[in-house]
Image (cartoon, rainbow, N blue to C red; front, side, top):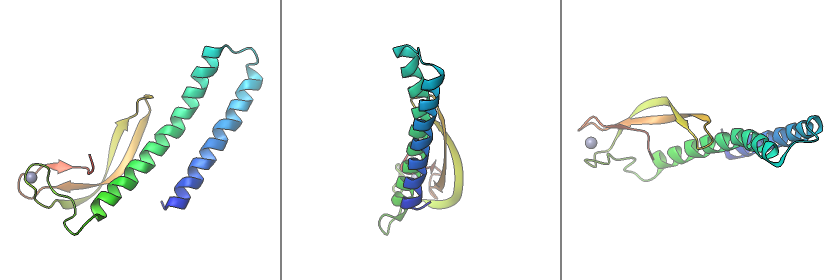
Length: 118
Ligand SMILES: [Zn+2]
């Protein structure tokens, strides 16, 4: 995804959250402060997870493209060989699963495999 598409996607998600929250508010007119807070946290965590995922993938891409040396092994400094894109699942602080599709690199010397920038 290009920068503009990513932003449009975030904007769309934000609008869905705001719309959804307005509907929730109409259905729960007597919600307590805690209930409102929990509902907003839950909805925002979806946007947060998407933003983390998109940003982390962009920064991984930038890491591979940076400099002629590319990405080197943190242990021996050998240039990593690209081994294709792999999925990696991470969990955000909000407990959401984020799936990152990133280039995976393996060190030809020690066999260490990493997803830069880590
Ligand atoms: Zn190595």
